[in-house]
Length: 316
Image (cartoon, rainbow, N blue to C red):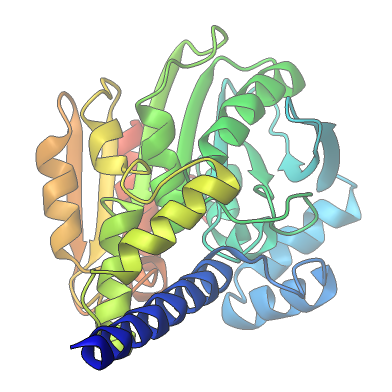
């Protein structure tokens, strides 16, 4: 009996050590910033290779020094970065929110729609721990909601604008939905939200990836990793839930999701759409995988935004 108890104790100790080690690995894998996040030259090359329609627009802006950037000190004391483009006589500002381990440059294809086709001011922030912004860990759209709320105030002062669109993709979509459930700054007169392939919660998304990549159930790894996240970064996976945030949103929201998305499963958008009260619209893009709705339907994507925002597209 004594030998059995010792054996069981050793097995339990090994399992505990293995679980904690795996939890630290999962946390670092999920929340560590991209080591090459500040390589802007590489990002610009990748952008124009994938979306060649952006290059002439961007070149024309650079030629007249209309494509600019800025650094601001956030309430946390960190220095954060954003690109921006102003538009003459516009009353609306679009904030474009990038995805996990991406940066603002990667989503200039959306900025072109808002600036060139819809006539908006545009601001593209590098979120905490992304691009040229400071930050030691990615917040999966939960802590980043505070970044965006501050950038709305910055944009209002920069452009003298009170009408806003917040448009995010993937983790940026989760950030957008998290913002939608918060009290917005006093400078906001009107607001529209666009979420493209966001997840219901960090818990749901990480559980899905744990099963898809490693064929593991949520217990025990999700529980221990979420606890480590709480201890290290002050938030848990279950707490970071766009599904809960959209229930509090009373502003119009457009939901976009590819019907072949297996990274953020398409089923999540239906739960999000159902939870959202008030004005809303849903577009499921046929044949599109994760974050590829614009690539699959570039003209319709712009047209859908035009209809949702009630802004006529400029003829090209």
